[in-house]
Amino acid sequence: MSREMAVGNTFGATALSSYGGFWLSFAIILTPGGFAIETGLAKISEATFLNSFGLYLMGWFIFTFILLICTLRSTVAFFSLFFTLDMAFLLLGIGYLQNDGAHPQGQCIIAGGAFGLMAAFLAWYNALAGIADSSNRSVLFSILSWIHMLTYPSFFVIPVAHFPWSDKGRERREKVDNSAARAA
Image 1 (tube, one colour):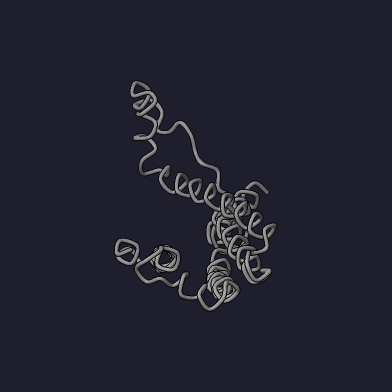
Image 2: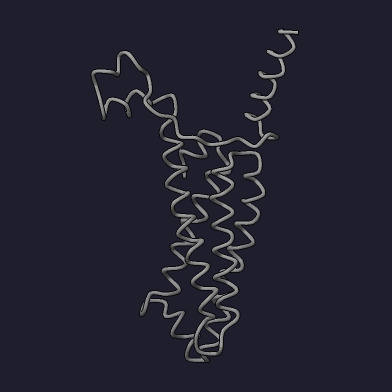
């Protein structure tokens, strides 16, 4: 997190530290013994725990929605990551809130898990896209073929589409518009 703040990436620092806090709180809630939050609420009634956990997940849905709005100026891949993560929190929250008093609503939990798996895949995809940038493409290329490293600077580029209204999308549009104006 400190690196993200040091380079001025407030969004990255906020997201990484917050979701780190999510996993810590998730473990504190569900780990038996220790804080005994799940067992303490379940002693009141199982529905009390299920409803409380559903509200907890809905809080993360709201927070993730706020971050989702912030990704609209980024790439489609990054937006897709936060969209699927937001859908996972929403469906899991609904699943726990729509309980029968003993168990969460199974179909919503399964759908939320599916969106969670898609979010995990997109997180790895975005991580690879962030790592495979122009600063280290030759390093990545050298893993497969060090002989061609001197001839070719890169062997692949991870495709990430930019929204037309994002800074990079506008830059690309201006380059296209300027070249078309010069040709006329």
